[in-house]
Amino acid sequence: MSQLRPAMEFMEANYNRPITLADIAHEAHLSVSRLAHLFREQMGITLIDYLTNVRINAAKRLMLKTEMNCTQVCFEVGYNNQSYFTRTFKQVTGMTPRQFRQANKRT
Image 1 (cartoon, rainbow, N blue to C red):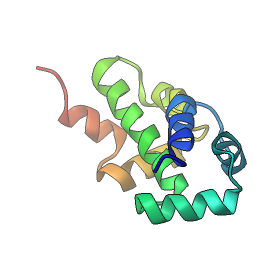
Image 2 (cartoon, rainbow, N blue to C red):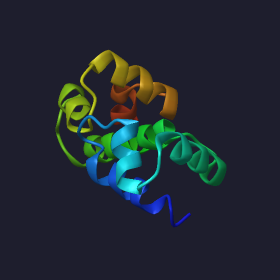
Image 3 (cartoon, rainbow, N blue to C red):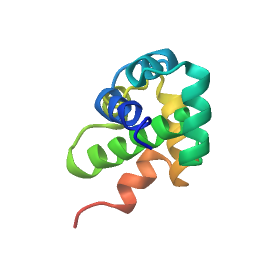
Image 4 (cartoon, rainbow, N blue to C red):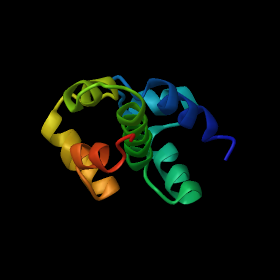
């Protein structure tokens, strides 16, 4: 797990910008293939799935704590295509960003 910590910290600190697997591997001082293998073996998910979860969790926090609209949230968490963001958000959470916000509205 200690070999993966730099990769995880890098993704958590830089999720809001474009990140390549090569960027992540460079931070972990591993080859892309070795990092991908270790990550899958030790975490049970792929690097991309981990990064996606980091981004979607950040999006959920922004939707709960700010008045940013879905487009703003999309770009803030590192996506550059709103329809892809919406599709990914729904795949991860089971609801669209709009549905998530409505279901969690503060009363």
